[in-house]
Image (cartoon, rainbow, N blue to C red; front, side, top):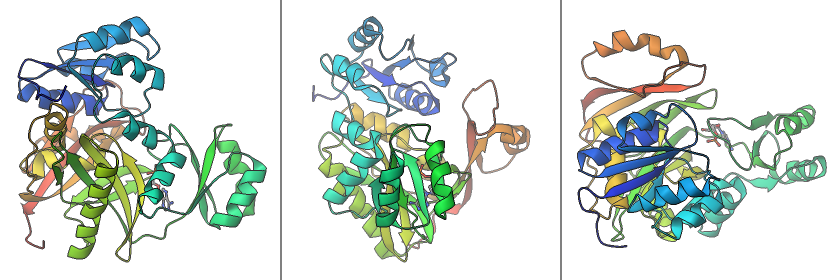
Length: 361
Ligand code: AMP
């Protein structure tokens, strides 16, 4: 199907978290219907979509019903099992495509892919047991970070190795999962580019944002990032290279380390990304609508930024600050409707408009 979706047609979203919630709200604004597929109960996206299927990713009957009720499928969660995707793809297109998913599901395939298309990553080597780890430390050096190859997010499944004594503990922390050792990049700052590619191959990049993490979880994104015009262009070039190489359709989040103007790719997320939430308050289009447009085969919008902004995640008890934030001028509040505020759980975010877009670029 390469015809654009018409208002009234339906997008299926795999994953019912806050990203799915914000995608479904954007779809609704364009008159498109959404059906969400989510294994867990109490899905934030369930409240904002026309249909919710609560079933596991190995429930073939539920997956078939899902695929039959939609015109195209996208996802907010990249660890959907391959068998589920096979079943869906036999009936409807999946955007972004399977290659984008499989590349980013495993840190080894991701880094290998990035290096193959000429992009720099941290040094890396597989390290799933003691012998491999000893060899990997010889290649990568110290300090290094041992990371599970799959299913890591928000700094989970990661252990720093600063000296030989840390190595054994780091392996234990992997809990038997296959792991990859990464060299620590001594970066000046972390930035990310949220970019999109349409069905007609058009590429549109949002302004890079500067990210600050706390305990491995994104804390703030400030836009624009403190980078030179040349670094900014380099970031856009990297986004274009990745999107084209993957024949990608949709929004992608690309996390980069800036080390003296050299950009080292940390991670790619084949979906809308937390570091792109600022676009709701800082640009003429937000990442969610841009993604829905791409997936629906609609034209992309030139994502001109109109404001300097800072997005702050509301994590765990931070929701206690909501009454104060709700009264702040220029603060755009977004809550995900989650009932319970557990430590480390993303409950919402606030984007503060700081000033009209500075004309640095
Ligand atoms: P990740 O889950 O791989 O995005 O890692 C979470 C955070 O840990 C990153 O945003 C960085 O702040 C830090 N980090 C991860 N990998 C590296 C690395 N190779 N060098 C330095 N810092 C890193």
